[in-house]
Image (cartoon, rainbow, N blue to C red; front, side, top):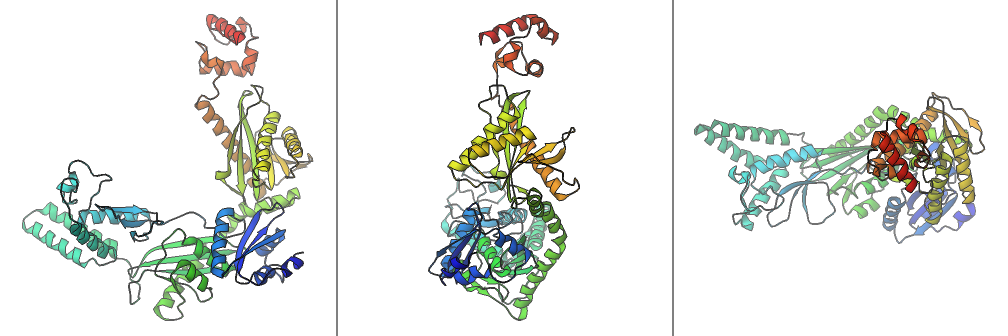
Length: 585
């Protein structure tokens, strides 16, 4: 269906965007030749995952750029902005810890994850923050840089322990700091001979003076240095900082392994495993570009020969090497072996997770006879005996909760006469009126917690807004457990209670209920729903709950008799005062 449009696409570099029937961008790519790349999606046969992408494409847009590098930059910006369903995304925002020598007048050693500022002296990455902190702790014992956040007015304990020059009371020259930072840099680059020699001399001197405790401290420090720096050596002839990137993939999963080589040693490693929908090599290239937006780019990258490295090299401003033999190739191959092993170990767990999430979403679409509902918005209401109504909306994307999209609603129009039907109408109108007015992404499926009333409320509101969104209700049984689905046409659909689809629906319903209940408790805890009962002397929380449980609303309590109120255990004078105050209000 895109043959005519593809004919008009130029054979130029650029970025292309695929959209679904709601106009939502579901995939962003870049190409040296737009026409050739885009047409490849609609010619020949594809595997299941790529077919899933193609089936959801209803529109194509593209932006021509001056070069493939510009196309890559644009692609990354669009991925960051739109978070497309079928683009590979880093599974978390993990950044590794580094050790920094600050550039302040009186420098100090800190552990940081921020690499955005330029002209910083950073060492790492470290495998975890604990390893970085232990190294800083060790260095602070050896080198007397300041430890405080702000300079105090007098010296601290570190000065008396010989671990700080106390710039708060002493004048410390720039030359002194330069000598110290130079030694620290040597140490962090792996040259520990000078430090070990100095510490061993001090240990012997302390022992000769029979200062055995001090000598023992020096020995512990020496052992710590040897333990910290005694990692495996990489059999290369230089000490360049470089990252080794290996990958391995099967029909639907891509595994990536990165070795961080610093000073001839593996300082840390990074593993990533995710589902991919486009060409696996392009997915690896996209991953590398995204990864180094958050991590320091080394002087060299080793990658397998199949990758197109020219654009990446220009984008990262670093040298990309494709070793074909020798020690460097063996090291690259080791990264590939680790990537393969990671995929083989996790494939069963990943397959199970996919069955629980995205595959269940696919099956849910088939059961409801609708397109796959990748984005599901589910609503649940909560109130106290008909009063203080609130509602919560949870969002599941690809079968997983997307908590940043959750929303809370305080019901404004009920006046202590809450019903699920009217509450649902109000909250759905507020939500989807905003969706219309602000052009917010529409869900692929709207779920309401409840039966006929709640589904009818949803149908009425969406019809009034002229919105075409599939609707279903999740109905519970007498034991308040998920039982079946009710469609927009009020058709009852039973789902196998042992199936992954049923468990997905249960998770969504439980999450919506939890979110609404917690919000209600939060609101009540803050006293936002204070009523006139809170202002009447002698009426505490327990008495208020008794009254609301029996009479359902404050308005009905005023029609109660004094005898009825005293029968609840309320003092007669308090009961008379209560009726009087309510009638006045």
